[in-house]
Amino acid sequence: MGRNDSEYFEKRARQERERARNCDDSSARRVHEEMADRYTAQLALRDPQSLLGDFA
Image (cartoon, rainbow, N blue to C red; front, side, top):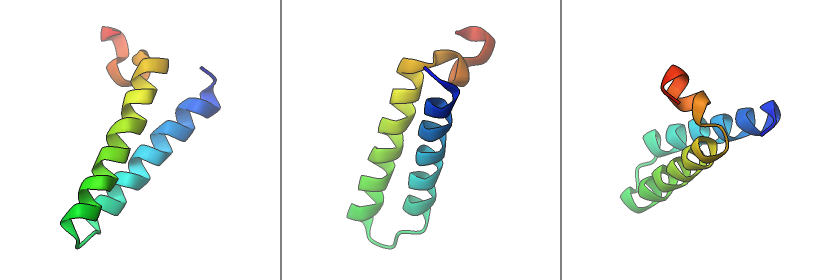
């Protein structure tokens, strides 16, 4: 996976978590959290070392 892909998934996960924190509606907050989890999962699948460091 290219560095740009990793940066994209990291950025999108952060954005979705921020949106979840700022969301007043619990349903919308849950959707943002789920999206953030999916971006994080994609990052882990494509580049496990970015999340696990030396444990990968």
